[in-house]
Structure formats: C-alpha cells, structure tokens
Length: 305
Image (cartoon, rainbow, N blue to C red; front, side):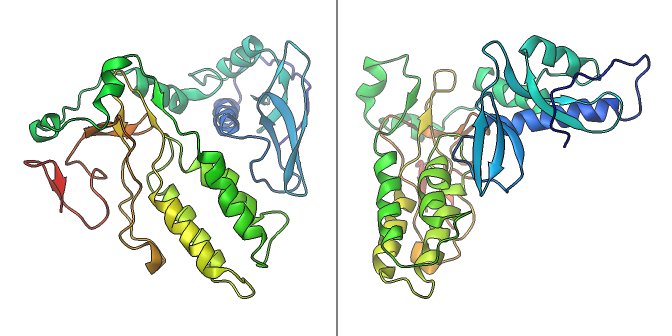
C-alpha cells in the first residue's frame, strides 16, 4: 500500500488496473469503518481510524488527525496498480473513486447492500404460534413504538470482569495481542453487538476457555465460570423497520465441552418469531439460526426441541 497524500495526475484513457484500484480503495474504506483506536493490528500496518491517519506501532494504532475539513480515506492510484491512504474531502474522494468506474461511492456496493437491508421492508412473517406469544416485556413496545434499539449498559462491566481475572491469572500475555484486553473490551464487546456474527460470541468464549487451560494459570475455574457467563449473555438488538428481531443463534458446536448447550440469551422486548440483524436481514422462526445448535424448530408451537 502506498501511504502518501499526493494526488496523482489524471491520464486520458483508463489503464487495465484502473477499475481494480477503485474497488480496492472501496474495500479498504469498508474495512476502516469497523476499526477503532483499540483494534488489534500488525506493526507497520497503515489505516484510517475514525477519520484519522493511523499507523500500527507495537500492536497499537497511533493516530494523526487530518485538517479540520478533511478526513482519512483510501484512494486509487492513477499511474500504477495500488491505493494510497491520505487526507481528502469526501467529495473529492468519491469523485476520484468514481473516475475509475467503481460504483457505490467510498465504500462500494457491499456497503450499500448492508445499509439497504435496514431500509428494505420486512418481508418475513412470524408464524402464528409465535405471534400469539406475548413479546418479552410487551410494554417496551407499547410505550415506545419508535424504539431504535435495545442496548445494554453492562457491557463494560462484562469486559472488565474478564480483564480483572485474566490479569490476576498469571497466564501468558502477548503484548501485541493481550488476551486480557482482546477477549474483553475488543472482541468480547464486539461479539455482543447487534450486528456481530452469530458465532462470534461462542468463538470468543472458546478462546477464554482455551486461555484458562494454559499452563501457569492459577485461577482456571474462575476464568471458565466467567466464560460460561459471557457465553449466555444476550446480544444487543436493533430496530429494523419497526421490528426488533431476536438475535440469531450459532449453528456450530463449541470447541470446549464447558460450553456445550450454552446459547446467548434474548433481551426483553425482542420479537420471538422474527430473528436477524442489519447485516443478515430478518427471517421468520423456523429458518436456520432461529434455534440453538442441535435443536429443531417446531413452527406449530414456536419452540425448539
């Protein structure tokens, strides 16, 4: 990746690599949308983090702000294959990407598709047995019909509980990928957000148990108990066009037997007959992921067996 702020001269005809450069820049900008200052990184890696130039030093991003009217973006090179990371106005950045023939602005088609899932009318219909069930905390819906999301205030405490136990464990800690931090406030919290992959929470809990079993750990059972509690914690839920769906279940078995049969809880206020997220869309009970691993949906009773 070419890390510089030089605008390339515009040529006359499109080179064979022009479109690919534009699409590569869009892919980077999509990736940058999910990065934070605490995201894990590889030393020497360059990126945009929350609109600022960023370079990874010793496993952590060091940020450098752009001028007040500019933001950090990935742009296509003009004279050769590749991209650059620089500060630019959004208008100019979108224009330069569009000049390559790539469509969809800064982030491209995939970003537009992800957003359109939220805007698209809900076509899934909950089975009658599910509709007959009272939604958890029905008053949440009747008193606040414009509810945008169901968020949780304890996620910081959840992360801190693991970090405290991990730091006291005596277990091995890589300074560039510290499990006491990554499994807590980074991957741990990210996996509890509404848009997380359905198996991200289980994967993180498995990693917690893996760490607990390492040689030298002096509080193995406490760490495993924490991982079990984490695995059962609900994920955030978002309103998608008037529906607050339940969060999908992971359809894979955990690596560690301590996690067998454990699933994420569902928050009060979610619809028991509709499941999904902004990234997956909404599906009716009975579709894959609407029952925990190893169980089958009974649409007639809106239960899993």
